[in-house]
Amino acid sequence: MAFQIVRAAPPPAPLLRAENVSLEYGAVCATHEVSFDVYRGDRFVLLGPSGCGKSSLLKAAAGFIKPAGGAISIDGREVTGPGPDRMVVFQEFDQLPPWKTVRENVMFPLLMTKRLNRHQAEERARHWIAKVGLAGFENAHPHTLSGGMKQRVAIARALAMQPDILLMDEPFAALDALTRRNMQEELGRLWEELRFTLLFVTHSIEEALVVGNRILLLSPHPGQVRAELNSHQFGLASAGSVEFQAATQRIHGLLFGGVEDASGAPEAATINTSPVISNVILAHAGIHAEYPITRSMDPRLREDDGAGARADGNVSRIAEKA
Image (cartoon, rainbow, N blue to C red; front, side, top):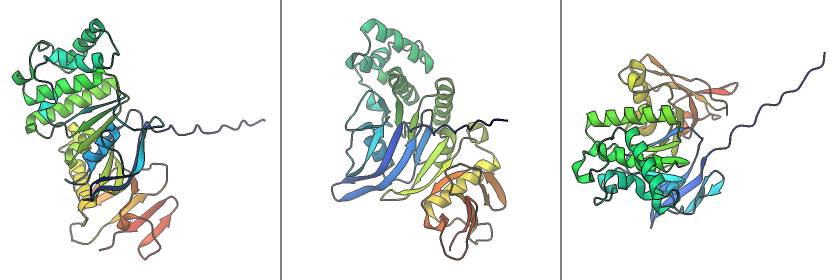
């Protein structure tokens, strides 16, 4: 019997790649050698405390900031400035020109980039305005809209451009809790329908778990990669679950240190050191939350030669040091 050798297909190339990106504002170092990959269809979240450089990384990806070191590329091309392949939704409500109606705001980038003529731009604007639930408000001006409605317009304007990647810089941070939850739900609904690529910045652990399928944890100033993990199994429906709360506490510990069990003793964490993502069981106070960590830059959570580190195939079980 003849055997046919089947070679595994190479992994897909990332859509966005950040390689050793260091960002500086004068003498202030915002981030230090940050690297990550965003693949098509990802909902990739940059999570960290204020001052860790997460918004600066998003602005660098948008082409607004030039890295002091390293590089960011989109589809293999280095980012050297803004472009229509990357659309940004900011936190501020005044990102919409106040003299333009909702329809005119959504049409504006389509006309400025000459992607569509006026008739085509108007048709596409109406489509996306309806898609974000604002049908009937086409002729309204921004000052007549609520904060959540303004953010819907900004999302419609961005998606109407059909960018390679949507960049969102804490877009729901200024909204009240109920509106924020509704907008998170709407964003998830849009992603399920369209499967666009998203780079999302937040300082909320809960929002990161709800919005993202992959999360990059950044250390306090200057921002460095603390860990990267998968969160695809979480969402608004699981936000009140025991597993969700355990994951929230674990991420807080990874960000700020002091991950301990109920007795106050440092826990052990199973860290995936293989390129192949495998499930990782993380225990907190006797509760097991299952989600994979794809890499860790925390020296307490890396394989080393010291006592308490035991290699087990591609997975190491690392005893966190006090």
